[in-house]
Image 1 (cartoon, helix red, strand yellow):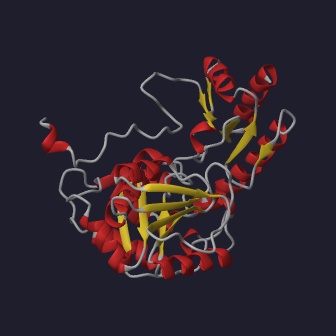
Image 2: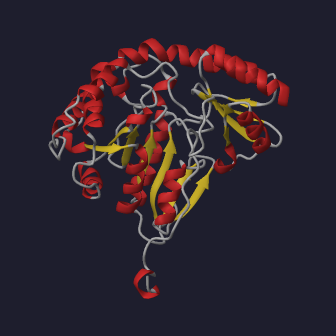
Amino acid sequence: MPEALHSDLPPLVPRAPHGGPTATAFTGLDFSVNTNPYGPNPALLRAVRDADHADYPDPSYRWVREALAHWHGVTPDEVALSVGASDLLHRLARAFVPPGGTLLSLHAPFGELARAAALARAEVLIVSERPDRVPPGTALVYVGQPHNPTGHTLSPLDQQALAQTCAQAGALLIVDEAYAPFLAPGAPAGDGTGPRHPATVRLLSPGKAHGLVGARPAYALAAPEVVARLDNLAPAWHLPAGTAALLAALPPAQGFLAATLPRVQAEAQALARALGELGPVAHHGTPYLTLAVEEAPAVAAALLAQGLRVRDCSSYGLPGHLRVSTRTPAQNAVLVRALQSLI
């Protein structure tokens, strides 16, 4: 391709590292993925299987938006649908971050958002405390609620204050609630984690808590003008029939969370206590925790050789730490024994 024709195209940016499967075959125990080990939710799996896969759906997915809007107490025009939260993050960056703009993140952002910013030729600023002001030129502010992998959260008052700070600066606040259901097992998921604010985009990834990450369900709740811009960047029929059916069936399928998430939380706490005997552990009620170890990449490689996958946190700016997500008690015991032999 002639240089003159591609000089203004987005740069080629490597894929963001993630936990979970790779191109290399793996049949062991995967502690690198933050998902409900007791999934998939049978009701949602049934919705995926029973979906109409033979015909094109309504391209506006109105029935899905209406079901989620009624559950959350918003209008259908305040619901944006997606295959995975990653797609919504890329669309948010494309819609709102101009070249040379700034994305501010409280702690390290999810890798896909950092990659989306790089593709938009935007700068990413990382802060460790809730900012009292947003630097000029900041278009988006990102908060994990809770953050992955640290587990840090903002109180509702702090979240509201940050949203107001963003509004005054003309920025949008992205509140990533991917792991919020794990913090309050049995609570009505439709209630959300904080107050509504017109400058806030709530990002929800229910596949994690329901053990259906492969279906890639995700959606955002935001002001109608924000949703319109997100929809503008989505292709026609951007949801497969099964993912659309899963999202529409989500509101009445919450009993699964009440039955399983208290177990997940208790088992994550037990795992944190066991690993705390081996080194400093940071755990704040999420299904995942971090363990400080010397030579974390080497320890992760040694575990992988034993058929146990964990996440090296170097890409999060946390070298010397492993992220571990709970599985069942018997499987957790296998990991603890393996780490005892390595540390």
